[in-house]
Image 1 (cartoon, rainbow over the protein chains, first blue to last red):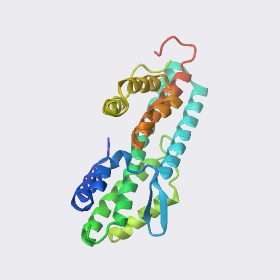
Image 2: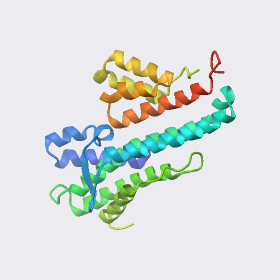
Image 3: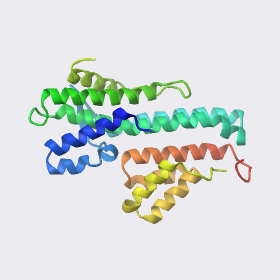
Image 4: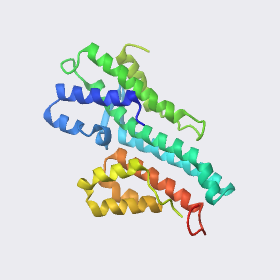
Length: 174
Length: 77
């Protein structure tokens, strides 16, 4: 289930895009939840330019490696139906993280868009309000990735923490 | 043996993707996911958006790991 905060931020970005962006950008943003973070580089925080696709790709690889190690260890202990039963909570945690990583792709794009927004595109108050929404979405994602209760936590790259700090600044603190 | 069912979210992704990748490729991806063929899923799904590729690859990995736990069985129990 996609967290409510993620849904809200996606709705915000679409509204902002329709309201202020050129037609070509609006067309591109139509698929931001799915396509916005390919190989394009974005400045997502002061002094931090990242390829969101590369960043998300790295996190995804780590996420898969942690799952593979956990299930390899489980399979060394149990097989067949016993494996199916004991792997269920691991699979559930893995799927939850998988959805979080998809959301992260969108969150990073939204952060980049906010960072680049000019006063003509969004007033400081509007940008701060939007930054709070995106920040909440980002924290939802990182919370899922950092939850080590079933699978070991996925390390959060410093670039993501830099984005969080930038969003805190845009949101006016907190 | 790999599971005989696929997560409904994955089916939804493939249904949406049919217009982009065509019915044959969508069915091939579905078969690869069910078979846990991670590499084939990666190759065939390249036309899909990044986030959807992530979801499909992860489902294939789940099936792949599950299949390894059923080696020598005729069907999952």
